[in-house]
Amino acid sequence: MNVGIIGYGNMGSSFARGLKEKASRIVVFDITEEKLKKALEDGFGVAKDLYFLVKESQWILLAVKPKDAKSVLENLKEVFEDRLLISIVAGLSIGTMESYLGKKKIIRAMPNLNVAVQKGVIAYACNSEVSQEEKEDVVKVFSSCGSLYEIGEELMNAFTAIAGSGPAFVFKFLSALIMAGIREGFSYETSRGIAIDTVLGSCELLKRWGGHPEEWITKVASPGGTTVEGIKVLENRGFSGIVIECIEKTREKAEKLC
Image (cartoon, rainbow, N blue to C red):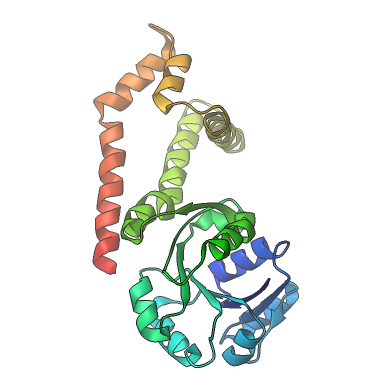
């Protein structure tokens, strides 16, 4: 499958690297010469204009800034034909894309930062023009960039709050855990390693063996033991409620920006 990528910024370049092993060919277009040079250095073909990119591709990944999406899509309308558009433009609905491009095959996707290391979390929603076979092909190819979740388009803002902004919240928790380790006497490097490995291992355990997180808490927290004392502090300070409110407020802000 030949994939054309419009926009070679942080996300566009991350997807290009992730798709490298799955796509037959990747061609990149960007208005910035420096980014096109970087694409060449990374081993990708570059297009001299949008029309060449479309002609050379079956799938088009739109990775431009929201303010640039309308002009790009309107310019492609006459040459797009039966190609598949996969947009990762924030806040750009399927309906809006159809108003610019026409009734074409469109998938709206929302990735998070972790695509940069091929561990992204990617939500997607399709319009009625996308067949089940095409959807399955997209999931198969894009799984090289992370985990994909098909959701209703109305849940995109909630997904943005949990997974899009989520890495920042995880980093904030990690930062606090690292600082706590330093306060207890560990060096920064040692505390950082302990914190990261603890979080990674806990996530892998939950993912591999399943169950509810609260079940695993009971396996760590012995009656009258040390862990219970820490959990008590978190509960007294409203830790769970703070996280839930954090997601709620982030989702509300995402809705206002649409």
